[in-house]
Image (cartoon, rainbow, N blue to C red; front, side):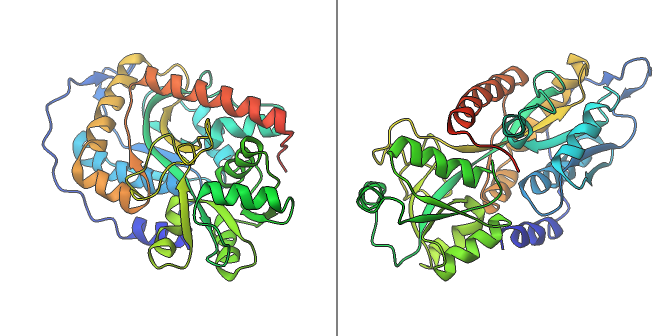
Length: 329
């Protein structure tokens, strides 16, 4: 459902029109004597159909116009394979990684980090943020976070939530809720976020901290009841819903982070050029609208700001995963 929606949107992306922007000084690739870019650029990401793929294709299409060189998206079987490939690519700006917070959260789940994103990659920019949304099956007699917490405390271990893979945003958002609210809502794992939503719609499970795009249409249709969003502030995706924190659970926040990376030791001039180009694209109203259509909020940053966001997220989730004893499969 969610993946299918993304795949339809990816397939239907129209050719971007010319975008008027201020001229950016040409950057020479190290040792080449040629202006950057002088050949096609590839954006490497994980499998087709998800947020990484969608954002990569949308930005690649616009970059092709603004840079005057073809920018193509290359999907790898997993995020780990995509990340390893880019980490070993030449630091010349022609191979980029578009990926999410899984890049650093996976390290805490497995005990032995595969990558340190602040060391093994050159951070270019944040590209999008996407909060999860706490939804319940209409049969569950709660209409707010406070009512859900009260019910869970009155019925310890009786309520359950749908979860995708261990360490996914869907999983971590629910476990953070359990800890901060002092409740025991039992995890029911599914093979994917899409199958978890199906389980929730059928009434097999009672609630879910779902990815925004996977349940937005079901909330609108009244098939699921939205209680709150998991971000730090209210989301333009669900303007009528409060945050979990403002609903009474202070300190709660969970947001999926998407960003662009280059191989380690990519020259600062190239990182700055790519940052400037991508940031201008993300500021375009038409691009922002397309991101919202995929339940993502286009958001750019400076490279240093992006590194700060990553370090903060690593500190938060590293400590939580260790304390909660969550281990990858």
